[in-house]
Length: 379
Ligand code: MRU
Image (cartoon, rainbow, N blue to C red; front, side, top):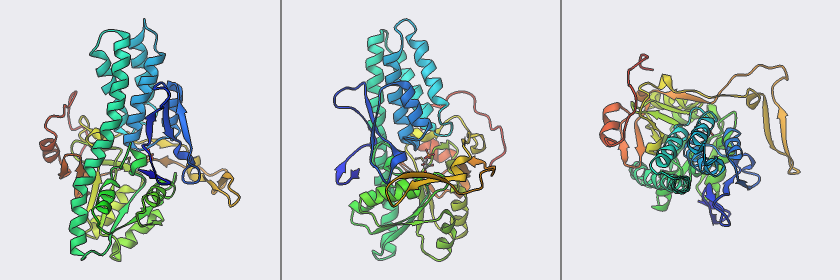
């Protein structure tokens, strides 16, 4: 997508060497556009854990390239063990995003399919590139399917702007390109449909204020930043036509993990009879968890709540206290929206109801692994 009129992906191998992986350091947006180079596993792990890169699809793509960097570092004699250890290390960096484990497993499987270390290194790099390309392709297709929803609403409104509310950043910055929640918006704009986006600021890390508003502005999509708590009011007063959010992990039964606060938007949407869609590539489905209650929820540093960071008028980056210094804060990064509150899942294969039967019917070729027992009552 566009940054100052130039097309970028969020991650790519450097032109001078595929042993260097370039990312956009998202901690610096929207004030500074900084490209960072990752040259070893440790740097890639930090980039994921400290949120230089974030969002399900991009975490997955970064994990793929991180495994490529790990393969370059691995010893010939202990190659497979070193690679497996790297996979475990990466898996712990962000626990909720499903794409991370999915990408690591895919790399390990690809490596296991060939014999020599040079062959393994070659196939690992090719698989990492494929994961990134597929992510972009999946998101483009999510956009094509989701566009139909916005087209229908636009026709009902005789071409007046379709007002979409989104939470956090499930835009192209959260993937390799296009995004999931934003892909239908970009596709609708390209088809000449009038759109306007309500952007939740998304405390505490403010991905909406810092990332979604910026990327929509770069693409020329009309958007308005609102506080997280404004969504219910806007829905009650007829200012929201549809909610589209992303997801970090969705069970094969349709329960959705997404940035904290998503559940409350889904409740408000239900109460106001507003469609609530979740957009995702199939790489975000968890085929082993039957119940959203069992999705691991990342708990991050309380300082993300007690402090806030930004840029002064003089252009200096600063982090300041907003709560008293002794305040105890608990920082849950994600919540679960039960399937019953979801109108539909927008995937690369089409739009599907959020339940086991419909999801399995559309993705009947996707393998589930392990035992599958419902271990807790429905959420
Ligand atoms: O903590 P983050 O920024 O990695 O969280 C991910 C998100 O931005 C959202 O939860 C998003 O809506 C889903 S990821 C495509």
